[in-house]
Image (cartoon, rainbow, N blue to C red):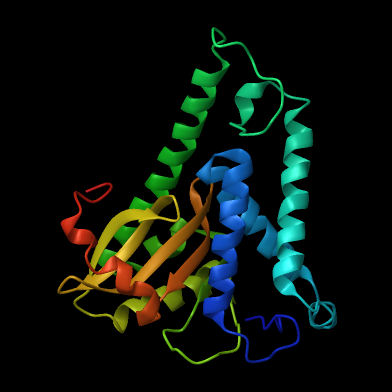
Length: 245
């Protein structure tokens, strides 16, 4: 496990980190208009954060500003790369000259975005199936070798940020989490614009899980347990059918 220090405050909240993730997702979505691309940008931003050593992280006075700057830099890198490849490789929402309406590029971009969404959904479904069956090996198989899990711990007090790294360790974390939420029902629903997982007991949300996906594997598992952050999920069952069910 890694303690990134989060700007030198050893008591920084995991919930705050998840809030920063939403902030970065909104920025990336505004630029690219693709949930899958935005999710990858945020995952890469946090990977670079964890690559810093403790001394470097402590020296960062405002982590939110650093994370935002890095996410912006990654976005610029993608934009520069997109300028040298066909427009069909990534759907971008940027102020650059685009193809005329008669061009097939927009349709191809839409299909590309749907393809990435389908891949994400497939990983989420495998993750949920493994969770429901309690098959530890199947759960570990869904995860990338260097997968990471971040959770707010469920408390309302400030807690040290300690993400867990590695497929086996992440699978064990999820198994322990599910063991503590016996009787909860798992549903596939939109979370931060992409398919995610909501766990409920008697209609009351007890956890929300968002997955970062690359290819056919989950590279990040983001868990919200804080009751204050789950209130808006309590009534989702009355709003319509669940994704992937």
